[in-house]
Image 1 (cartoon, rainbow, N blue to C red):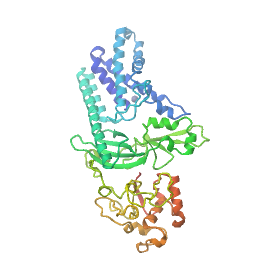
Image 2 (cartoon, helix red, strand yellow):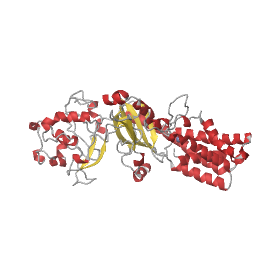
Image 3 (cartoon, rainbow, N blue to C red):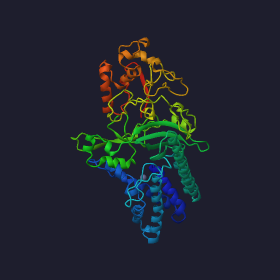
Image 4 (cartoon, rainbow, N blue to C red):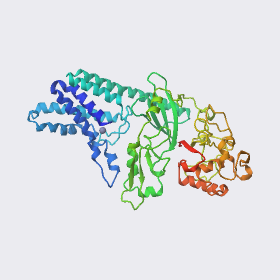
Length: 509
Ligand SMILES: [Zn+2]
């Protein structure tokens, strides 16, 4: 939680509880003590960047350490002779202790993870009831405290603290609703929640992000939990969950200080590779983008010559939520949300069918990591989301965009690729940009056929994966698979298209 809210909550609670006895000093000691646990941000080491994140919200945030922490702050008052009276100082300490507890518990109510019972356990408590920044709580406490101190009377402080705590309790109710909805969503996909997390998004308790693991894959969606309306979901994406054994041999060799294990513990084991840069092992709980997984922080193993084992990548400063988009979601005007139901979806009734294409339909070596071999029979494995690419021709600005490069479905799925409910089924060959390919085939009438040894879908996709560089797709088809193996999750780059189109957005599996 941000330091301002911590300080305000500590001061408000302290003044409401001990204001009569200690006067405004109660608010002062409360505000100051409630700031102090975050002094742990100064614990850091140049040689081991993980020291800082491992210790933040560590022992200073333990309820068991709180009496010591509160005593350290209250000791400042001993410089004034009037506070050297034992019973007076103890009253001050108790007042600060209340504020200290409030900091620990408020942090535990967010998603980040707080070691509430260090040293008994290093479990990181994160109840997911409130976002790390929520102006409603901050402003309520500020108004209540200002009124209480001006009058001066404890009642405004009491009212403000009650409203703020009630709001957090509402977050707990919303969280429970979110978990119930997530079970339905997973059931509709035929999935089992092996592990799950439902987190509020910034500054509200209506839009929530969900994560769950099913069969080694982390799935992420967005929920809208209207206070007075039924729950809706905006479907997201999924990525393979990364465990220690999934690291490359080089990464494993480099992992001498158990950096991966410590990072996985910090991330509550929600670790995935960044879709944009596979060398980044990222915390999937936080994403810069609502459309795709764009990690806010993660680690990358360095080359063996480097003195530090990993680099810590932090893009917190890049975090900019689009207030317009979030507001549209909050008020329920975002058309991408649909009602939650637990009926299993067949592929044909899924609203996003076809906009997610299987990346590995090109028959490739079965052992390629991260790529499923072609299954000649249509089945559930062919309908797993692998990659979604939306692209538009520069000549066709959104929303009248061209078709996404859908897979040639007949081999694997035996049905037409379809973008969404609004768009009628369309064969890939009719996509306008088929005629804009750079290799050999100049227009639709010259679209590739079986005599080219490739399906139309194949040749359309390959430029996206940079496999037609050499102009000979027949020879490069094998390299294409290899390229995918060496660059798992690599997305489209602007120069993949040259002047033929613009990448408008990407959803990664
Ligand atoms: Zn804290």
